Length: 307
Length: 230
Image 1 (tube, rainbow over the protein chains, first blue to last red):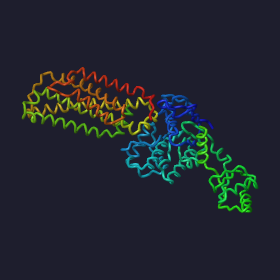
Image 2 (spheres, chains in turn orange, red; image 1 turned 90 degrees about the horizontal axis):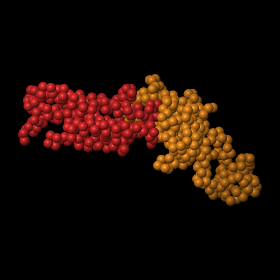
Image 3 (tube, each protein chain N blue to C red; image 1 turned 120 degrees about the vertical axis):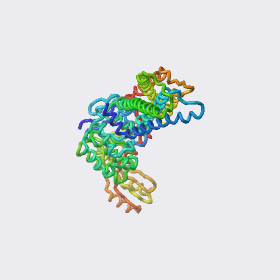
Image 4 (cartoon, chains in turn blue, brown; image 1 turned 180 degrees about the horizontal axis):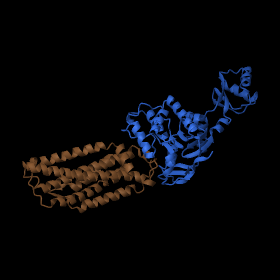
């Protein structure tokens, strides 16, 4: 897979204060790249730099194999985007807004507007002024606008913000479809980890303006994050048995009743058998997989501890 | 460029603007016809003759449509920044300079044409009405027309250029009220009439202000390609 977008030591400071520091990321063609980070981490600023709305203080950006300069504009024909929240000309109708978008993009295919609206399940509203739209509807319209021209690269900043659970699922399907059927590359920022987890191929985690990790989802899933969660009223005795009878050392007492056992070599049934034989009551015992959310939080915490 | 202007017209539903122009014209005409009546009650006639009346018409038309222009600047440029639609506009594969220039040319072009046409219309209508109703004495000399036309065109150019000054204040604050207020201030300073003397009568002054206006527009948007849109 070729690299469609890359940044090299990208830095941006506003009034002498670094907002984005030394970000080097790369997005391969056809991928869905999940861009994760807490609020104010610099996700939007990075995306604005990719769209040339904000000019980098230092560092380089390369998109479609061409270095970005202050006056690059041609590459924008091949990109669809939503930045921050979707803005429209409020007094115009949805249809008028989309027509304007097509005219400015130099794209003349009337059918595409209808298709895009159907894709995001936004029908029968094309004659309604956008100011009467709810945030969720605006979000859908924004996505529709960004995909009308079938761009090669979609840059979406918090595209599922403000959607209801059904809407989120719809959009997830739309994103997967765009990636699989049209071969589009998607760069999606979000703070909703669960959503990103379900569709992303690669994630980049940004914190305080620094890209702290860029990792394929497969690697995260493959990492040793499975554990057995044991709930017992008598955690002291339980830990004693775990250590001395089962020789398990890799466990962690979460609070005074929950123990997480990270050793995967021992079967769950063996653990419960030995515990019961030693008169330790078990409220519950489950095998669990750490979600991206936990992975994300550990990463963020590690950085915080380090700093 | 023409395409960009057409898109602006479509985007902002400029048809309504022309309705406003017609209404403003009729108001000015009506006002001009009533003024001689209102004033004759007090201390003598308001205008010494048609020449003076026409100069007043010119002032009214210029003031009205320079304010119109500032409203358009506020709507087409300042509001795009305020509503952040500019961040959408600048992600299109079109040079920022071109987008802004299209807006400025559209507004200044329209302002100039509207000032000239309104001047001709209101002056013409006033002369006709005066012909029948004899509101003020007719003191037009034989070659007044050519002189009046030249004067009108020069004044219109000056007024159009002056309308650009508001961009400086408007863009600094990204505020619609500031844009319109700055125009009101400038236009009232230049066109206020005290004892038949107005600064705008010395044609060099409005022309200088016009040059300043064009300069301001240039400097405000000179670096537009390098500016961050936050």
